[in-house]
Length: 158
Image 1 (tube, rainbow, N blue to C red):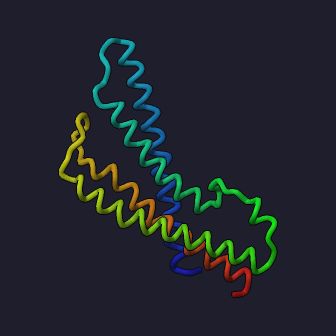
Image 2 (image 1 turned 90 degrees about the vertical axis):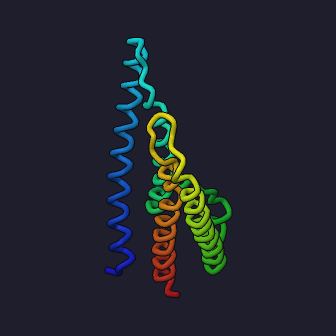
């Protein structure tokens, strides 16, 4: 088994755990907010925590969906193509995903580093931590797409 495949399996397990944990915390945070608001003593931090967890879940979930080949796609054109044309379209789509991943990494890191000194109002954590979800997702997408591309070429005998 290739090193890339092993790395992707590990990162997929970590992503699954993070998504489970963040989903659980998000549900508990929202539940606590509802209960305390009804009691007349709303929590000051739960809304912000829920928002930040939703951001992380969105980005990690997008990378996970790419890994599992479950991203929403328009397959009308792809299904009508045959042979080399289908492979060519797959190559173009893969290149676009790779470029998008690199953009997420580059600008996500820059954006995250820019906001590391600014803290969030309720949780008092660096806002850059929230924005780190974009480059981490980009790295995962890059790794996953490379593996998918290699597998597709191996399957086609290229």
